[in-house]
Image 1 (cartoon, rainbow, N blue to C red):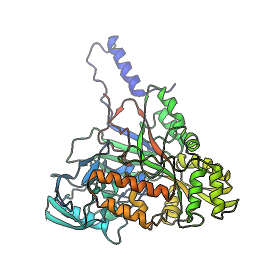
Image 2 (cartoon, helix red, strand yellow):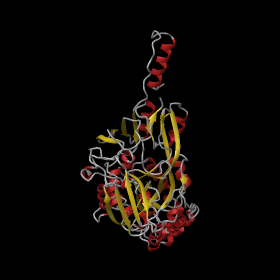
Image 3 (cartoon, rainbow, N blue to C red):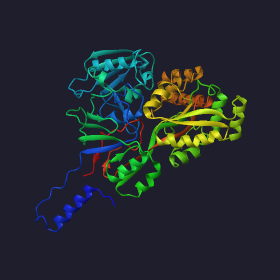
Length: 501
């Protein structure tokens, strides 16, 4: 049986003292470890969250290496970060941020109001490649009041502005190093970049100086393990200490039975969907999209792809968020209804469709089940596995797909349905009007009502087939503490992690 070497050594020393083997001399037990090796399923395409949509980027660098004006904590709440405080005008259109004293980039360059202006202007510029550019679209002007104070003027009140500033896409980069941030990231966080062995691991180390509370770890290694069986073997062998988003739910009971491990199943914001290319035939016909919604049995998908772990959803919204509406009954599983809608839309039996599947197991397993369910209503599905980089290029950027399965892990990301150029290719004036009102509303009660209207409109239009909320199934050493149980934002925040000792 494999064992934990640290526990063995500690126990051996204690036995030696009890037996007098060390002549009664005091024994200094080994100090708690200062390093951690964390498993991640997908390698990030690069390390700049302001220039790429892949959640894997934020899972490495958010809060660890890069920081924003605000941050999202483990409970999903907005907290001060590089802005220690702020004031908001009565009309909700002017934010004045007081910046954190002593904050600096890892290369020694200062963090000040000029840096904030550079980053916010860069994110909202016409040529911006920021993956969440709409977060900054309400900004009218950014003004430097003094080195420690910055004023942001908005075109209209924006209820989610502070929340948006806490996303990975809103982190602060140094103007001098921003161009190289994809491969040589320089941030203000408690950990600095050490190196990236492509295809293997990313290493961070404790920064020499940081404005915040001292972190307990000296070194972090994010190890890329793309295969589920390899993930299991690495944990069992002690090659990694934690897999915060463990990819193989079928192994959880085995880990639960092993006292070396802790298993925590929490929530993410991962709305897992069968995404449809609304701009491509036959999905430009709402009857076809509704037919697919009736053809898919969510429970079968959850049982087969996730071994029963996952909450069903009926629109693009996480059940734990305020304003959630249970729309899972809008399109009950009904093969006859699906066939009738397809026939009404003129879709011939045997019509061939391509289902593009990125690497995660939920997509690959779910794809097989969904292909079988669509065959039952007369559709022939070609399954096309793709690696992550190709999926981002062909599907997310190029819209070269019929259907795909993916989890959207950004919180409250209803804005994507209001983007004409988004890969769903959904264009709805009615939805845009709802979202525009939501974006301009600061009152939380009104926002909740608008969240409901937005969910109902998306479901009514059957933009995608909404499947389930991706759970956060974490497995880590029983001696490790401080990891997040839930994932309100795509991140592996290790700033509070330490070893018992």
